[in-house]
Image (cartoon, rainbow over all chains, first blue to last red; front, side, top):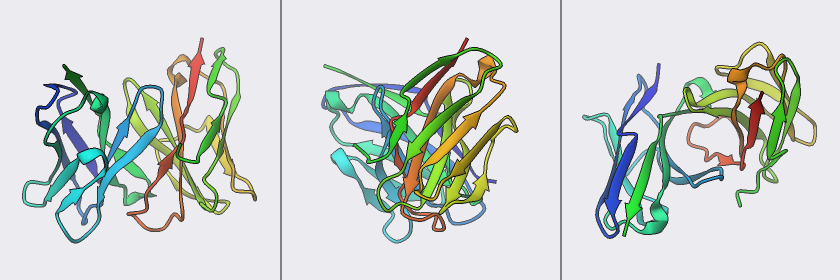
Length: 114
Length: 115
């Protein structure tokens, strides 16, 4: 079975500080991993995805994530937080046992203060 | 704007009732997924349709059903509603439904409140 664990339901940073959102996965097959962002009262938007190849993946809005197989992790980072980054972030793995549907973590709410 | 539309945006109903949520996928997308987002369960996959056929089932209750029509829009039917069914229901679509790295585009969701 596949699962995703996001460490920390709430992360607070100052504007300009490093953003680090943690995600660990469990999968018996090579995973496909995704980060989505949800702004208030909106749907989910794909930030980035890892399929195969380069383990450092760059996404939109300056975010990137590194796939580390040995650590079963796919942490999301951004060097310098902006106020507009405040949102809820979801890590997901493609669900082999559920077709191509996504299995999501519980989400991490990012707050950015000035 | 993802190109996926969902109606209605909000729905308030009473326990025991039945409702229908509608989703129109992006133009050209053949696959539709339904997800439920609630405070206690988080985001959970309910069901997937691909070109009119059911492709995969997740944690969907027997009181819930879905279908995808020839024009590829999809409807999620929720019946005998309970208070615990109150949630945000998302529809997502992808170009096809057989590869695991296909990006899914999410609609804005329908917020269901059961009183």
